[in-house]
Amino acid sequence: MTSAEKTKSEPLIDLQRLVVSIRRRRRLWLATALLGLIAGGLVAMLLPSPPTAVAQILVIHPDDSPTDSGTLMRTDVAVLKTTKTAGEALKKLNSTQAPEEFLKDYDGLGLTNNVLQLTVKGKTKDEAIARAQAISDAFIAEYIGRNQAAAAAQQKALLDQRNQAQNELTPIESSIVTEEAKGRNANPAQLERLYSRRAELTSKISDYDGRAQEAGIGTPKVAAGTQIVDAPRILPKSFLKTLGTDMGIGLALGLLAGLGLAAITSVVKDRPVLRREISRHLGASVIAQLPKPPRFLRRSRAVARRQRAAATLVRAVSQEGGSVSLLDLGARRVTAALAVDMARELAEKGPVSLVDDLPKANLRELAGDTPIQVLDRGDAPMDGKERRIGVGSIEPGTAWTDLEFLGEETILVVRTAHANTEWLHTVARQLADRRIPIIGVVLVDPDPRDHTDGTLWDGLHTALRGRAGATPEPIPVPARPVTTPRPMAPARAPERKVLPERKAAPERRMPRPAPKPVEMFPDEDAPVRRLSTVAPVETDAERTVERVLEPPREKKSARRRPPTPYKRPEDHDNADQPTKRFSPVSPDNAEAL
Image (cartoon, rainbow, N blue to C red; front, top):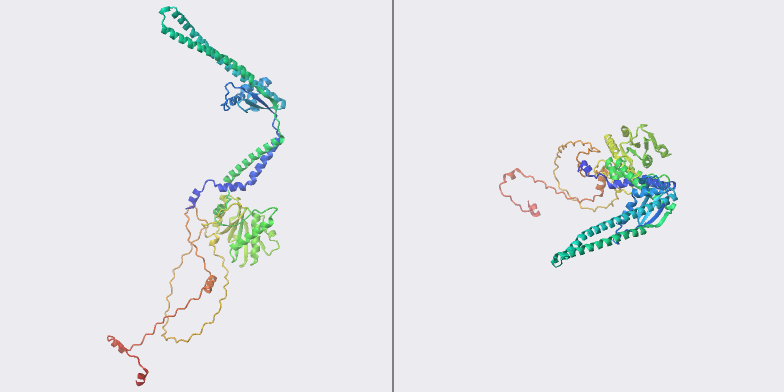
């Protein structure tokens, strides 16, 4: 997968990074929450709420039923908040205030299906009580008048229906009288129909009369039952309760505002806070991390951690001399102290000097009376055995061409969330152009809950596991016990003819191709090449140790070729004849011969 594909697969907003960024900006949202708390308290003390009057009204509904879910009471509350009711109340108060503005000063709440609570604000207590009384009277009058108008309209409609039925009954009565006057000539079927119609109309007229009377009776019941059951009174308020409520509201609003601001700024500023992000953007692995230096307490613990990190960095750099630089990015004090600690570690093995190119660092004061020599850039050339540590800065405005004089390789001391992604890429590109390899990155003030991997697995040429500059110390080999060899019988070695040695032909070796320069930061558009496993470099000391530790091998007896017997010329003449076997010569025969 190429770097472009990796970039495409990354989410638009990394939730882990967002949470860490918000947690790192806790000062911001804690400050806004504190400001909201203080603002709420000041509002409660300097702008107290106006006096509030409360009244309760009993409302009788003609169509009320046990199954009602509060619909009628919600209708009454809506009628209470109309400009008609507000206007009638203002007329009783003789006020010139607009009804629309007056609606903002009172509110209604249905406690039950028949009890309405009215809350009214005023500049003074008397004004609040007077307003509550006026609004209650206006609502009751409007409610009773509305119910009376509805009852009157219903009664009138019933009476009209009764009169219509009465008018229809009159001709039927006349028809019945005319038919009965015929005597025996009357039509029985016609009379039966007329009698039935007369009975039906008579029943309707009686029903309309009863319903009209009930409609007229219902209005006095509603008018008598709807009244003020709890006279207007001033609602008591506790100053501490009001203060706590306002401060709590201010705290919640300030906290929400701070969290939102922290989240927006973390996305907009694009400052890496995770170990993996900083390692990827700088093109180097994180080899150490240090907490933020305390101002008052726990200074000894911070010094001990810094000294351990300095010892780690000393082991990381090469041990054969040379120069190394510490470049600061947002942690000037830590960089200067770390350089002094490294110089003290290296001073035990040989001469060390510091090159001060970090503004406002005061390396001479930090070095004190130690044998460490603090120089300015370009003061004196470096000796062969001298170790030199250059201290500089890679903040915006850095002179990139001067970094070569601080050290052949560098260690970056970066404060978390100090620089944005664009500047980290700029630092990595500039160091690559200057051909200054990055040994590693020291993170300052990282998130304590960040457990992401800060190792650069793609860059073996810059990772510590790919560095082979340091020569390992020889391993002590235990002495082997000396054993006395057993005496052996002397053996007569067979004679052999010494042949002249042949001169070995000179071996022709093909010239090795020149190694290609390795780019520290390859182009992101090019595909990523998979690197083969790097074989460990075997030194002379390791070969010596392997030969000493290797168990003795058994010597194989050399198979010597027997000497070729000398043949006479006559033997070659009888080559075609079979070979004659001779019997062995005994001593007696030898004497006879």
